Amino acid sequence: MFILAVMAIALMVLDKRVDAFASVRAALSVPLAPLQYLVSWPVQLIDNLGTVINTHDQLVKENLDLKAEQLLLRAQMQRLLAIESENNQLKALLRSSTEVQGKVLIARLLAIDSDPFVNQVVLDKGNRDGLFVGQPVLDANGVMGQIIQVGPLTSRVLLVNDPHSGVPVQVTRNGVRGVAVGDAYTGKLRLVNISQTTDIKVGDVLITSGLGENYPEGYPLGQVSSIVKDPGLQFATIMVEPNARLDRSRQVLLVWPNKTVRAPQENKKS
Image 1 (tube, one colour):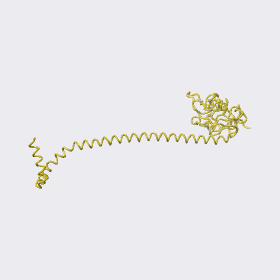
Image 2 (cartoon, helix red, strand yellow):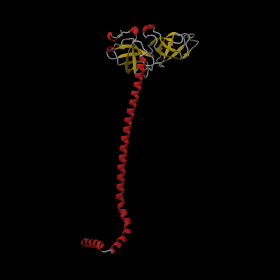
Image 3 (cartoon, one colour):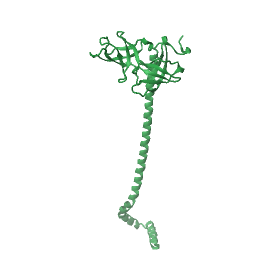
Image 4 (cartoon, one colour):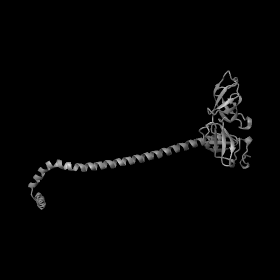
């Protein structure tokens, strides 16, 4: 070992001091180059593999971050769309309130009855707001229903398409009167006890007639959507498409008609 070390030192000294060794070193580098490449290849492979793994991990992390950010942005966009839709409903209600005679109040839906054959909703207004049983409820498009139960903070509304609802109506075209009841299977209304010879057409507009004192006169209810006249039946089957968006409206308009104002004294008009 000592002799080999001495020879190595001697060769290094000669390589530095004697120019002839430069050509020898150059000649030896040619056969040694493949061996040097072979020795360095595993090291380069490991370095490259480490770089690829780090890059992959970074891309995976960036991809997850982007997906999370995209999900958050979508949620924010949906919330903005919901707010915009709510604002549009409120604007429509405000425009509608200017056309209603008497005191009005905007309320919000809190809950919907889960029974598929019971069309009722719960509002966020109650006794403290002056609500009363039988009070008309509208949306921006027409009659929605009436209050059937009032609590301290909430109230329950029977929608016009509930089977237990009956709205006295008249046709704007000719004044023909009738009663529209709810149809649980279609979500629409039916005009009942209308003879087959009565002058009613598809497209006729129906408004509240004011009879029965449940709904004041002149509120829009719906439009005749179909008429079936069976010779074997005494009355025609007349379906009515409600104007109100019964399954979509979240804000509603509570009405105190002038002739039936029952709100607290401080809220009455002079």
